[in-house]
Amino acid sequence: MSRSSCAVYASAIISVHLIIIGIALLVAGVFQTLINDRLKGEITLTEGSKVFGTWKNPPPPVFMEFFFFNVTNPDEFLAGAKPRVTHMGPYTYREYRPKANVTFVENGTKVSALTPKTFVFVPEMSAGDPRVDSVTTVNIPAVAVMNKLKDSSFFVKTPIAMFMNSIGTTMFMTHTVDELLWGFKDPLLSRLSKIKPEVDEYFGLMLNKNGSHDGEFVYLTGEQSYLEYGRIDTWKGQKLMTFWGTNQSNMINGTDGSAFHPFLTKEERLDVFTADLCRSIYMLFEKEVEVKGIPAYRYTPPRDVLASGENNPENKGFCLDKKCLDDGVLNVAVCRKGAPVVVSFPHFHLGDQKYVDAIEGLKPIHDQHQTFLDLNPTTGVPVRACKRAQINILLERVHGFPMTKMLNGTIFPIIFLNESVTIDDASAARLHKLLSIATIVANFPFILIALGVVLFLISILLIIRSRQRKTTAKKDTSYSPVSAKADDPAEKNGSFIGLTPVKS
Image (cartoon, rainbow, N blue to C red; front, top):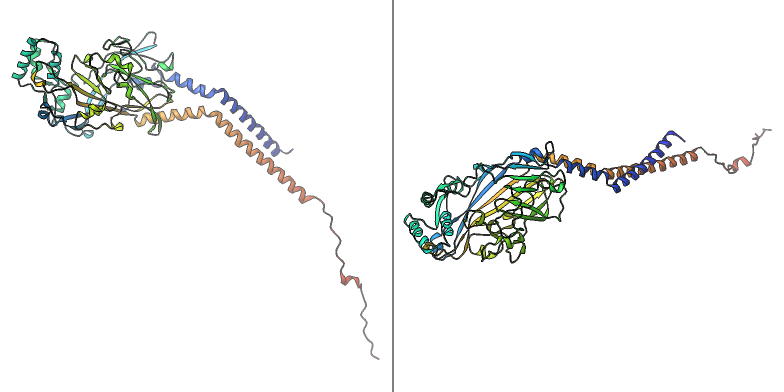
């Protein structure tokens, strides 16, 4: 056997071995297990892990957009007409949120941290100047004072009502965007603070929040179980809140929305705790998306999250009044110092239609007003997110205060927020590289099988071609009998002598 023939048969044998090894590795799941274990080990909140640095100081820019609802017919509304609002915004701020006081506790199985937030105005991403643009909206300080006194006696409410009337307090106020967000000195609160020093004389929707934090969180590192990566263990030292009516509603579930465990599935429920709502919510898979070439699963809160206790028994603990609200809204007065603040999704998205119909100028649109998280399922890394919420004020009649006599329980929109983030290019490139390596390693058995099949086919073709050459060579060199020539008629006469006649 020639050397070339030996090489061909050796290639065929090697190809068969590659196929067998590839199938064996595929069945055993060795490489898939290897990459899974590697990712589980790297995605932990521990010093030196791949994600710890970005968890402490997230590189993607976070933007907070504020949209105000400007009331165009306040007097008509107080006379009984439907309120009419127009949209103002966005007023966009860059949000910086590096972790502070990061400390490992309980033998490194948990890590505590604060997340102070700093806001810097971004004019090129805004619709106007917050120092100039004015908004007419509900006089929240006045409503909060009246709501605080609603159960007081006539003798308490009457002098306060007269005092409010004497200083010109009305149900609506007009201030600049900057004042409404970051604070202004309110005349009513200023006078009350002289009587009760604990009352802050300044009011603002984001008062004292620039540079502040929501309290200390303690997170599980995920070192003991990848499913616990980033999960909140305690908030402000508590494993359970005390705001709500049941243990279930007081539970602190899931993560803070910035970290999720790897190997997500479409079937699982993602729990997220948000301090702004003073409660946990959950999200379900909606659809597959792609962000900067990175595959992701989109998770979004279903209607049941803010459904009434009547339609969703899990939410019964969130109703602390005899008269509960309907779907799509949550009264958070219990964690807002008694102010009648009601939160919802923007334009009452996923809420009862009556809340939309009560205000002229609202139109909920799913794509524009939904809250969602786009997470890469392999790593759990958020590649895009939008947290959208609307702050409303419950306006109802308070006996003893004449200015409220025409109010009938309207949930009045004040502002909605859109806190959004998209993975930056550098982080996206690193994630692309990681996913490529993971894909190659996980598919290595298939690569072996494919290589073996290709090599086997080439070997078969070479063997067939070699045999064809041998057959052709035999035909060219073998003996073939030749048949006798056909009789030549000219040769049958033989040779003859030409006779020349002799002349006589």
